[in-house]
Amino acid sequence: MKKILLLAFAVLFCSYFVNAQVTGTIGTVEANTGDVVYIPVTFNGLNGDNSPIAIDFKFDYDNTKLTPVGNGFANYCTQIPQSDWLPNPNYGPNTMSNNMALINPVEVPNGTVIFNLVFTYTGTTTANITFNPETIIFNGNFDELQPVYTNGAVEPTTIPAPPAPVLLSPVN
Image (cartoon, rainbow, N blue to C red; front, top):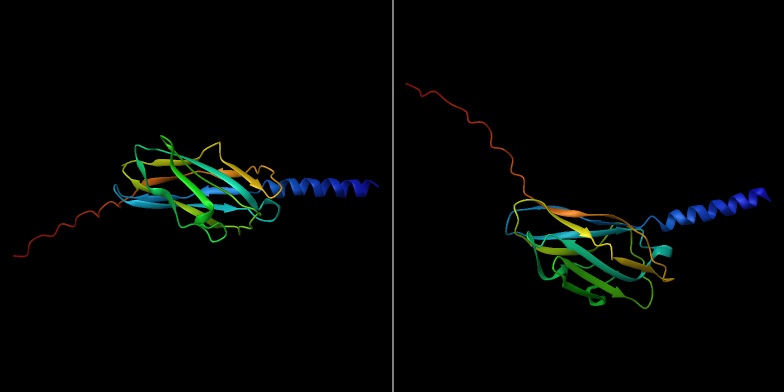
């Protein structure tokens, strides 16, 4: 009997961690002032019991260094095409949102770029982009998932220092 209870506890414990392994990452890219940048938003764990049926993404960004291009989103994944999303680049003064709701949950393979955030970089220093705490993802059972997020940035292009000059004596 103890073995059965221990096995049941182990299954419940492991299923908790399987559900807790959803991760979202905003990429970090380098750019020169004036460049248009495409920043990937990548997810792992949006499959199986964690397959999403509804997502409400909100992203905070430094509006003194970044300006959304168009609706601020591009290059949607094939699992959740652009036609299923409602982008809003002007959700707040420094927040943009993108949300969707489906009839059935959809499997998203690990490592999938859900879409790209698109900005014109107007800064000269690092511009951070973060998942807003109001971001919500629901699975097919309408359970709210609790992803672990990694935020990203646009960093100024690093230019390597020029090599030291070589001085030559003139030939007489």
